[in-house]
Amino acid sequence: MSSGHGPPSAERLVPAIAAVGLATSWQLPAAPTDAATWSALTALVRRERLEGPLALAVASGSLATTPDQAAEVAHLHEQAMATVLVRERRLVAVAEAFERRRIRWRVLKGSAVAHVDEIDPAVRCYADVDVLVAGPDLAIAYAELAALGGRRHYDAPSEGYDERFGKGAAWTMPDGVEVDVHRTLALGPYGLAVVTEDLFAATAPFEVAGQRLLALDATRRFLHACYHATLGRSRLVSLRDVALLTPRDEHEGRHALALARRWRGEAVVAAAVAEATTRLALRRRDPLTAWALALRPRARDRRWLAAYRGPLASSAMRTLLAAEALPGPAVKVAYARTLSRGRRRPGTAPDGVAPWPTH
Amino acid sequence: MTGVVAEERWVQAPRLLERRLLDGHLLLPARGDERPVVLRDTALAIWRAIEQPRGLDELVAALARSYEIDPATIADDVRGAIDELHHLRLVRPCP
Image (cartoon, rainbow over all chains, first blue to last red; front, side):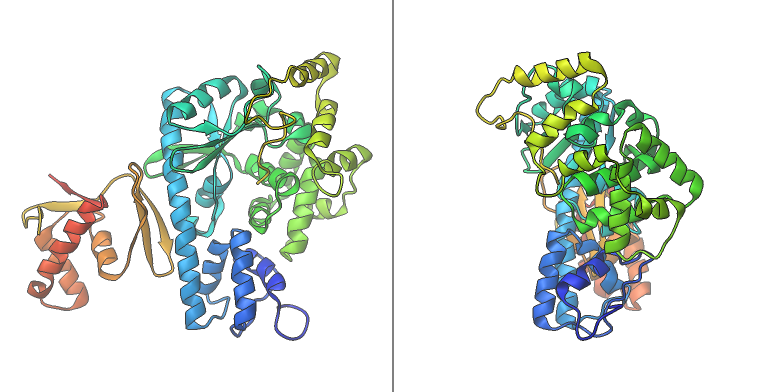
């Protein structure tokens, strides 16, 4: 590793694995690690979904391994990629159904980053299919998922909530694959502050098994990576996405920040870029990174961020603060009404709003 | 052997999901409910050699050249591998 004495611990090695192939100050050890460290490292790699970067580290010679360790990496990577291909098969089926019904939708996160941004698609591991669907098309999309045999995890708290205020819903398909449908990029105030129509304004096409798919464009993929890293379950793979997608030049950076400002998400972006820069020991100092490292969140952002991270974080807090992000009293009242009209049924989350898995 | 005849031409199946592995290639048809399949070594060489349609004799000759061996010694093995890849829906005969 770049600093310290003695053999590096698994906890210090795993960010270096996450940063393989990036401009990083981390250096992996020149000799294979001992068995105990290796065992702890592979457990962390699985938890952080870094089997792809680990395989890349071995293939590129960045990480020294014993023959047995190299064989274990090959096995771990093969398992992770088998999981990914089953998810991609489900994505293709969903794409065919959504395209048939002319639903406005985009591919998010894992599959998009794998095919559009990563060094090789085999570097990006993921466990769910994530898609963005335009609010007015949600009901049709949900009907299509149900027709494919899907089961929604939780009902909406009331009629109209999904299309207007919801983040989306998670579905489990007959093959066990989870399809996470997003209407916006996060729960709570930051999610409601996103101008969702902006998400569909620019795209990046890619192809999987002959199926043409559309991801968000690079700016929006970057912003989504930041929202996920800051407001969702924080994994190193999410920080790697942020690092891969951070705009290189000033013009692109300004464009991304202008959109983030419009969505009142500058503090979200700054937190993600600063965390990726620090934890992955990124060497780059582009204007956006410099801005992110210098930004001190305003009072409103400190309050909003606390609803997602830290000891005060809770779904109740996010639900409460969400009203602050809504424009004007009429919309706030409508939001409160959709929550108070709650139609709890078995399988519905306790507060009707919280069930979205944060990964 | 079942079904594979010398006159047939073979090509990689369309609509395959795939990933490169450290020691092979992972493949899965985009439709169906199979588990992904790993191809390594000879099976992978055969699959890669029919990215464009090829007759069985032509394929055997190309692989024999590549491995510097007598075509007659590998013809049955190649036919068997094609049969297995066809069963897995990773290759298809083409007109």
